[in-house]
Length: 254
Image (tube, rainbow, N blue to C red):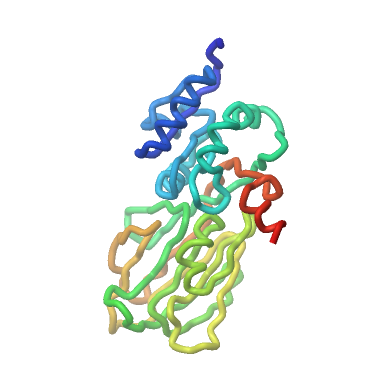
């Protein structure tokens, strides 16, 4: 089989990633080094949640194809067996594969370092189970304040993770951002879905609060300093069509 002009990267460090690399080679597609995936690849196959998050955050010019057990990911066998159809999707629509976009967030806390996030951004007290007061300011000027352990803003990709575990909604692709208080002091506190921008701040000086971006602690946030979280990019993602995924087929038989 002649080598295709398509350039594909496979990112991830385990045996599943190597299995996919072999499938890409067997398909006659040029395999790009993972370090060049963001700029050189027509598609990046990201194996596992960490690799997918990194690939999305890097905002590649080509599409990202999540592979693994996470929501909206192809299983490793499914991705390997359908490798040719995945590449066909680069040119046109293919049955069983949807093209969606996932947002990339820019996090600006007023310091010179601006962070990017693919899954979620949180303000959370540095000591476990310690309450502070937080403010959420929405793009049209409305503001909400509450006492809690913290607050998390999640993209559709991140909404099925930590944000969902603490009571937030699962957001469909292109559905906006979920904003969820963490262990609020009052049971009457809302969660929200916002379109593209929100500003968080700490409203008390008693407890140190950390800024956590995609699961990594970045710094301690000063009280009353606004932290702006905004969708500033979109990454094209190939996901299995719901009706064709093994999980969906199992649900239909219940």
